[in-house]
Structures are given as C-alpha cells and as structure tokens.
Length: 446
Ligand SMILES: Cc1ncc(COP(=O)(O)O)c(C=O)c1O
Ligand SMILES: [Zn+2]
Image (tube, rainbow, N blue to C red):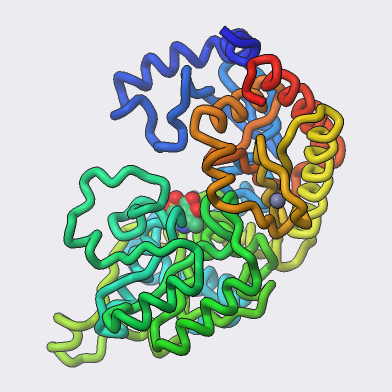
C-alpha cells in the first residue's frame, strides 16, 4: 500500500462504515456518479466558509464548493438569513408567486440579453428544455454538441460527455451529432446537414474547463457560424454564469447567444436552474389560445419545483451579493494566488505538470506542461487524456485530500474557488499541495 492510501485510511477511517451502509442503500454505493471513488468516498458532516468537516472531524479546505454552486463559500449569512426568513412563509404555494418574478428580474438584471426566462430544478433540466425549445422553434431535430462537453445527465446531453451510454435510446443518439472541438468540423456538418436546430457548447470548455476552449475567439467564431447557417447558438453557462463575470461568459466576451442555460451559482446552493433567451424564440412556450398550437406545437414544460421559494430566496440573496459586492473579484484573486502557488510547487518539487484556468477555476494537470498563459491553456486534448487517466486523477484527489484540500476530479483536478478562500487558507492549501506532489512521487504517480 502506498503512502497516500495509508494516510487516507488513517485520516478517513470512519468513512468506511458509512460507505458500507451506503452500499446497501444506493445503487453502486453512491448517489452521484462523481462521488464514486476508490477505496471509499469521504463522508462529510458540515461546512462553513472555506471549510468542510468529515465524520472523523478533519477540517478540509473545500474547493468543490457545492459542485460549483457556492461562490461565497459555505452558508454565507445573507443566504442563510434569506432561507430562514422564507421557510416559515411556506415551502410551496402551488401557484404563481411574487418571488418567482423577483427572482427572474434578478437573473435578467445580471444577464440583460435574456429577454425571457424559465426556471427549472437543475442544470440537466435546463439543457433538456433548451434543446426542446430549439427544436420547437426551428422545426429541426438535430443538435450538435462537442466531444466531452458535459451538459448534465439527460439522454441528449449524456452522449460523448465522459459518461457511460447505457440506457440511451438509439433514436436519441441519432439526433445528436458529436463533433470534436474544431470549427471546421462544425462547418462541415452544417454544410451537409440541414436538419440541425442548434449547437450547444460549454462556455469555458468541457468539465469545468479541464478541456479548455480558446476563448473568446472560439465562441465568437462558433456564434458566427451558427448565424451563417441559421442554427441556434446555445451557451451552457451552468458553470460560467455569475462566475466569469457578473453576467457570465456572454458578458465577459460580449457574446449574444440565442439561448442560455444556467444553474449552480444562480440558485445559491439550492436545487434550481434556468433557461433564458431571445423573446421570439422563448415564446414558443407561450399559450396562444389556438387549440392546435396550444395542444400540439407549443413547447411544454412542467416542474413541481421551478423557482420554489427556498431556491428563489437563496438565489436572490447570492445573486444580489454578487451584483452589489466584490465576491467575483475576491474569488478571482484567491484563484490567481492558488494557481501561482501550485505552479511554484510544481517547479520547486521538479514535477512536470501545471495549473491553469480562468477566473475562479483552477485546473491541475500532472504530467504535462505547456507555455500557455496559465489562463487559456493550449494543451492538446490528447495530452489531457494521456497525462490524466482516471486512476491517476483519483490518486491526485486522494493526495490532495490527505493533505487537507478537496477538489473536483475529471481528467485532472479542478479547484473551484470562492470569495471565502482567504490568503491564509490559500497559502495553507499550497503548502499541502506541495506535500501532495511529494506523496505522488513516493507512490510512483509522477
Ligand atoms: C456545464 C454543465 N451543464 C449542465 C450541468 C448539469 O447541471 P445539474 O448537475 O444541476 O443537473 C453541469 C453540472 O455540472 C455542467 O457542468
Ligand atoms: Zn497550459
């Protein structure tokens, strides 16, 4: 047994019993595919600010941050107060509410290009709805998506997204055209197939930016291609929304998508998400009083929990703080300090690898370095796959955990930074990371 696994067993021993119980409760032992790990996942009990605490009482600096939903850190006062205030006034009023309108107005203030929106309960539902709207509006059936790009776990999105394909009907697969991240290949498809409704893209590249895009040029060129061939341009801003700037990637790079999908930060850590876009397109969801349209052609959407009050309260509170405060700046600054610290640790420990990433997302790759500007990484996709296979990625996450920090693993480790990560917390993380590199070397991973 290597040094990382030994430390892991020692530090997180009490999690083993929870995993044994989890295995009899959950299909596959866990209730989210990303929580599956070997030899067992760490079970957390509570969290505050930049930290989370596991069942052994370890204090872990958290860079998963609610899978990217907590820009202010865990349980910020503004969000906690808003939720407490709301919960006593009803958890579901079964009708249109004042807060859903206020919530929508709050989102639209930050993303002014969204002329109309609809709420959903998760990012997965948002991309499902966005694709349906695109089909309904254009009368065409196919969707172009990029290889490895992740838009949730619904059937159309799951194809070639780094997830397994079991249970996805062939008929669905036939309507999704997967292309490499290459504009020429997109254009080839558009030239030869006139049944494409839309192109959907992860605005900072696949898996939180682990597979980076050459933004903003890539997105602008993609938008131009969509306009040229009359297909809709869907920006998935589930990760980038309210993070890359107050108005997301579209504000930061001045893009004008037809449809935008959002989730995570917009819901303040609660289950909630949205689709927005141009009024003419979004209005395919409207009732017109024409029975043929209303019953047959209209794009339908339900959802018991759309803009449910706790989500609305938490979402408004977090977005208001982002709008009026400096949370994005603080998170960006902390991420820069973390990224610089990691790159210095690579150098000092003479380990090949590097950290890069945009805004408050820091991507760590072991085994490949490039002369990128550490923001828009130019690493070839083949190198990402080759340098970070699943087992090495998991080892990196375990090495980070035993040295006091947790991040999101997928062909690399992503550190999702929040405004709660102070300089002191960041410096402590960097020191732990330096030890993690030593441990990885001891165990032969680098
Ligand atoms: C870019 C992107 N789109 C969609 C989703 C799906 O969101 P959810 O997990 O809320 O269903 C995710 C989740 O990580 C995502 O990263
Ligand atoms: Zn790079």
